[in-house]
Image (cartoon, rainbow, N blue to C red; front, side, top):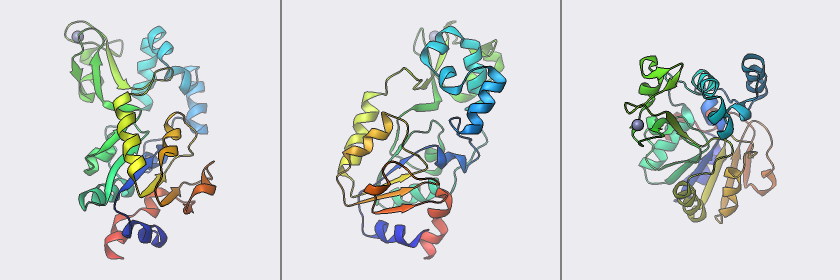
Length: 246
Ligand SMILES: [Zn+2]
């Protein structure tokens, strides 16, 4: 782990981590908003990702939505990386209060994190639009439960992923939990995000603590506010082995 970051962690007790796509790319989950993601989507499906992941597109082009969603947002074999494991460890030893993430994978929970606010929902939760019954990811990925790739409930209703699509609002309970954690934090670590996606990125305005750390490969609009800004891969900066051995 980066030595300067470790010093800040050592003197903090209410750490909150706010993460974006860069945390998951190190586990092999590509960022669909990246240049390559945008290009591939346009080439293969004829639309950009933000269009295909919008509520109106889901309603109008359900089959194509699911084709893009299953082929580009689901990575059942992905495993947690360094940052995921370090954050779970910091929670376990009582230093970290919560993880707030824009990612819809479940890698933080897989690593052992308990308090995770998933601002954009989770691919692991899916519900029937008719009767409300919940289904896991395995169910909707099993083609036997689908008609033309669209998962169906036992009642015949259509199943929707519990992820926040463009044009949809964030879950109020998730937001208020994230705001509370951020406003009470003494150290906020922001990692793997360029802070470009609103309203999620606006949540960091609630931070009133002592130290703000930014870890991202490129500059962000908030760099000047940071106690420490590190331009590197998050897995390298937040390695657990070096934390315990250092
Ligand atoms: Zn149903």
